Amino acid sequence: MDLEGQVAVVTGGAKLEGIGHAVALGLAREGADIVIGDLYEQGFEQARQAIEALGRRCLCVKTNVLNQTEVEQLIEAAGRVDVLVNAAGGSWAITPEDIDGHPPHDRFIGLTSCTDQEWRTIMGVNLEGVFYACRAAAQHMMRQRSGHIVNFSSTAARRGVPPGSGGSSGPYAVAKAGIIGLTKQFAIELAPYGVTVNAVAPGVISSWRGRRLAEDMDDERRARMVEGIPMGRTGTVDEVAGLVVALCTPEMGYVTGATLDINGGMYSA
Image (cartoon, rainbow, N blue to C red; front, side, top):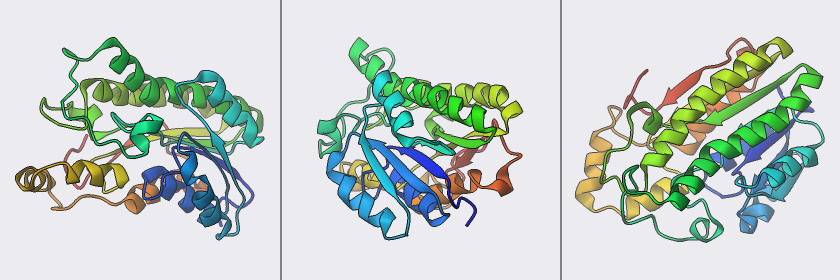
């Protein structure tokens, strides 16, 4: 296994049927021990059992990525950090209440209409928290002179979010565009230490969040969403996780600073 004996930190990895959870399982299958940072404590036990069933160790730490101290404590709790995947994020379902079952926002949150609090929360979860985690993990990786970081951007970063798109927002598109720049900059700074930093930009994915969005749509809107995907279907969490895990293996050690799209042909940079 490519990651035998390594330690991988995954934010947003506790929610079953989520991309972060699929990434944690994929990294464990490659031999990594897993440290999950998440607000969703209800998922900790199931996530731990699933990873331990693969023969790997798992530590779950309650972490609010909006809180710099909690993010830094998560990285320190890992002890050693060989892989960091920043999978926590979203334009809704990013608070404990939302994650636990609150329906998607019933209005589009645009840059011309968002409140200061909405801006700060969405930007904080999707961009600032990633910065905190990358900066803290970089200290470990620079000492080791090795490591892999994968961040999550989005198709929204490539083309914006049209007004009327429930469950998404303008601040989300801005934050995810920021991830592309943040990834490139960290990649440049960490390349001399043998550390790769990349991002993935998913389109419409049938995660727990994606399904809840689809359930909130009428049949016509759901059909239009799928019609806009050249492959004619939504993606799966395992397909996204497969790409993320590949970026953390030695075979991809010369790829850094890249943002890879995975969207069924919706957008190609």
